[in-house]
Each structure stands twice: as structure tokens, then as C-alpha cells.
Length: 213
Ligand code: ADP
Ligand code: MG
Ligand code: MG
Image 1 (cartoon, protein in one colour):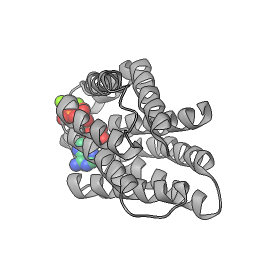
Image 2 (cartoon, helix red, strand yellow):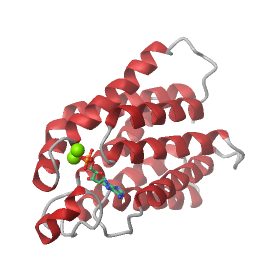
Image 3 (cartoon, protein in one colour):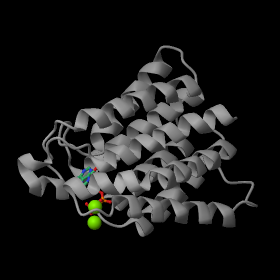
């Protein structure tokens, strides 16, 4: 993935989050403290402001841009989700810039696996705990499956975004076992997880960016 596409991806993510922030907030009002839409909006506004400032830096790699975005997200989103989104973008960027397969699809698949693992390590959520990990894991696995069977970056991104959206829907009947929503116990059942919903937007933005190329 090149740096131009990465910039478009981050801008598309900011756009989708801006458009959907009220829905994200409503989800967090149901099972959390109602700040998720505002948190994500603030975070991605900071990311786009940073991109605006650095638009002349032509030597930026995709990896450096993503590590930078991760750092910005940690310091601007706040809450439980800031460090989680931040570390996932940092892991993504570091892996993309590190040693790995030549093929960009396979390299990106490895990076997504590292990002998903970083959320797992930091948040200690298991599959089925009703968190963003219930989106990151299936989406990164779908991406890896698609590249493994010969699909290119765009095809794999579509498979990941579809799996992400399916993952969000799957959080609805789950009982939350991590984060603020877990305080509600059984009352968390019947609502989609807000962090999972945000993450699905980020995967959809990747599809948009690759199609805009
Ligand atoms: P806060 O709960 O601090 O207000 P946000 O509302 O921004 O933070 O984010 C809540 C989201 O963070 C949840 O919907 C969930 O997806 C995610 N989350 C919270 N705790 C964890 C965790 N331990 N592991 C993975 N994701 C988590
Ligand atoms: Mg919240
Ligand atoms: Mg909060």
C-alpha cells in the first residue's frame, strides 16, 4: 500500500466517522457513557489536521503515516478506545515498514494480524466479549484468507469490510465482558458494540480508498 492511498484511507475514515458519529454515540449511550461518537470524531479530526500539516512531506511511507495516526489517536480519542485504536494503527504501520513479504496483499494481511493481536494483548478481550476485537479478528482473518487464495488488496479489503460488518451485527446478542459495557451485565445484550461499529467504518473506508485509486 502506498502513502497516497493511506492518506485517502485515513481521510475516508474521518469522513465516515463524521457522518456516523451520532449513531456511534447512540450505541454508546445504550451500553456505555455516550461519548464514543464524539471521541472518535475528535480523534480522526486530529488525524486529518496532521495530514493537512504534513501534506508536503513526500517521503512519508504508508507505515510512517499509520504510526503517526496511531500516536495522534492515542492522545486525542481518550477513553478505553483511544489506546486500543492507537496501538492497532501503530502495529499496522510498524509491520508495513518492517521486513515481510514482497507482495503488498500478503504484507498488509500480516500488518492487520499484528494490529488485531495488539488490541487483543492490550485489552485482554476474548472473542465473544463484545468489543472491537470481535470485528478486528474476523476482518483480519477474512483479509488473510482472501490474499491467501490469490485475491489482490482491493478484493481482500472488501472481504475484510464485509466480515467487519458481519462482526458488528454479531456483537448484538453478546453480553459484554470487557470495558464499561460489562458493568451492565445482561443488560448489555441486544445492542451493537460502539467500538466494533467504528472499526467497521475504518475497514469500509479502506475499500473506498482502494477503489478511489
Ligand atoms: P469509554 O468506554 O472509555 O467511554 P469509548 O466509548 O470511546 O471509551 O469506547 C468504548 C469501546 O471500547 C467499546 O465499545 C469497545 O469496543 C472498546 N473496548 C473497551 N474495552 C475494551 C477491551 N478491554 N478490549 C477491546 N475493546 C475494548
Ligand atoms: Mg464511551
Ligand atoms: Mg468515556
